[in-house]
Image (cartoon, rainbow, N blue to C red; front, side, top):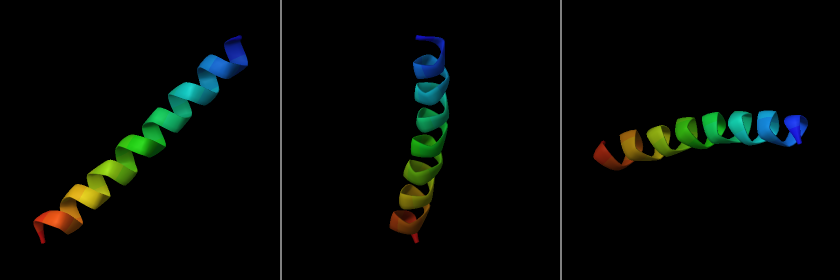
Length: 28
């Protein structure tokens, strides 16, 4: 369970980064 939680947190961080990049490109 702990491993899954850690994995989810890491995936969320990557997802946030990708979303931010997509938003930045969209604004440009």
